[in-house]
Image 1: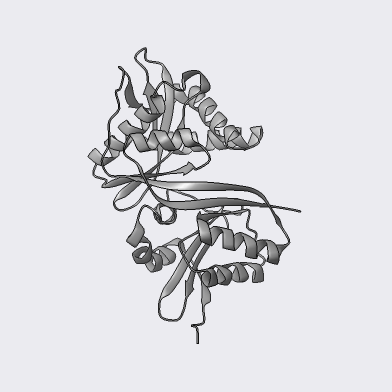
Image 2: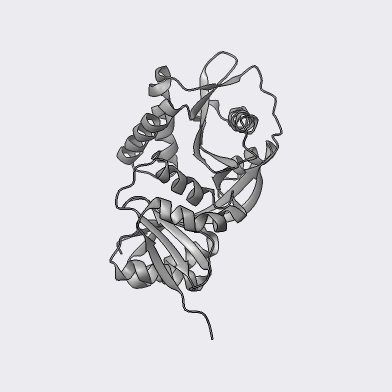
Length: 288
């Protein structure tokens, strides 16, 4: 006879992190999204709005964890069985909680999507298959006279343009992309988490950002090079040099997510030392 699963809703991010951390740390890079978000919430680096902190238990051990920081942000899943996924979906449906999208391990994500469309009557508007990459040693490319530097206030106009295009190229509407770009730069640049790659003529030609931290790792995202400067190696340089900076600062590993449908970016990251360690998915729901 199988064990009965039940879903627990924690009252605060600290409660969820205390219960989930030992499970999530077994595969730190694979679970960097959940670990980084929970740590950021506990430390006040992220401000939640109607958050959900969830764990699935069989009465003895935890079988999975989930987090939603905002009504419009994804439901983030840890690795878990299909039965644990069903437990989370059913609990959310009973509470009439909205789910705009789901992110997590590929199998768990697709199973949640099938269950959620059945329960909610929603359809699926977009699916992105993602790779989770990890780096422990940098394979430094030729820098061609360029350099990595921290972004400053004088870069804001340029970087808002870069970020807006980044979001537009991943499918966001123009107004949404613009709002996200301004929000991210306002939040992260003063914390010295946004970086620019300058070419040999001191032109800002690429960017990347440190977006989350775990005990031993750091996550990189918002890697963007405008079309004019592509195919010149700038993306690899900014990622390699930022990764080295993070490792030199005491981190044991760096990680990042990629769109597996984009072989160019996946190849760039592999050339500087990143290896694919897991597959993830991001599935967006919409009214039918």
